[in-house]
Image 1 (cartoon, helix red, strand yellow):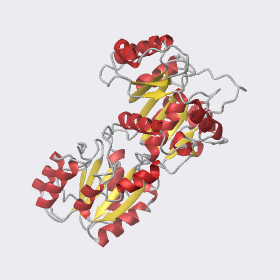
Image 2: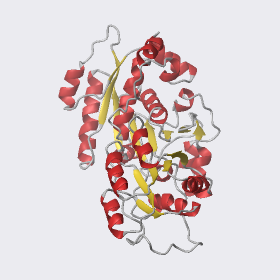
Image 3: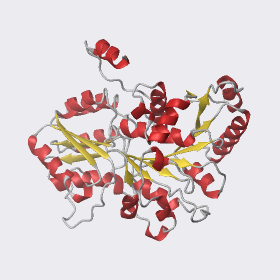
Image 4: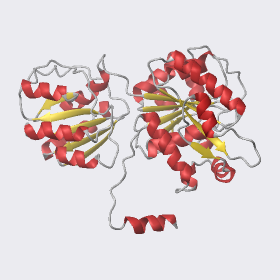
Length: 422
């Protein structure tokens, strides 16, 4: 469903626009897709995309209006913001109802229309439309509308923080977090950043084959300098949608932090990135506990043995008590099926935790070892490996996109599938 968002201007749609010298805060790093019906509106949106205040946003423009948007999102995830142009009243309301059936939760909708009517405006608000802009529009009208979605005091922060932690050292939590972040960026087309919080021994730089000169340590040891521009300079770009805030992985200093040491970094990332994946080291301190409790969603990675079971149970109990209004953490089993190793069955694990594992990832040292040594993700080593679907499943659950939107099939699909299999 389309999410409800409180309006940032007066209820009258024909209210006078603010003065030209108004301050419009820049939009964060969000994805915006516009579906226009006229070339004039498309040109205005295109010009808006070149404005400095939308410099971080990924803007895509298509023609076809409401019908094209509904058709496009039957087989693809929706972006952070959808801009729709529409001429009619009945077609607009009916089209929004249809769009809501394929729209992901949290997506914000801006409508550009030509009907100046308070009743229509109220109907749009009731359906969860974030803003209604009267056509014809200029570039600054589009910039103002999109930026105000995220700069208004009552607007929620755009970023979702996902914390991944191992129930025990050596269970592969970092590997899982890096591959899940890759799936979020590649398969869900969400801009994401991996923050490697294991400053002494972090492996994110190795796994993504990155060696940036700066990283998260620069931010933690200079909290007074932390702002959007500073964090942007520290990010290392892995793909079009994935960035890395790398750990130094050196032992030339001791990394003893206070409880709130990472707060400024997390707040800044949350304001600029749609998805932040925290790779939390296996240690128990004030700041790791704070990071876990403060995350939007949590994934615990465990191996199928007794120590992992105990630790997972302890983490579950603590986090559920500390986060009574949040959904419980998720957990997955990793390295399942090590030869000659006695293991606790997934059913027994689930019975003790009172929750089913989201996936059980088999022990396959050959492919995981090759990926680690080559600085690659599993999807880069083997495009059809079964663990890739598991990473995508985790990514969908953690980001709130629980339904898989399959691509439409065609007459050639069986042949294509056979060729892929070969």
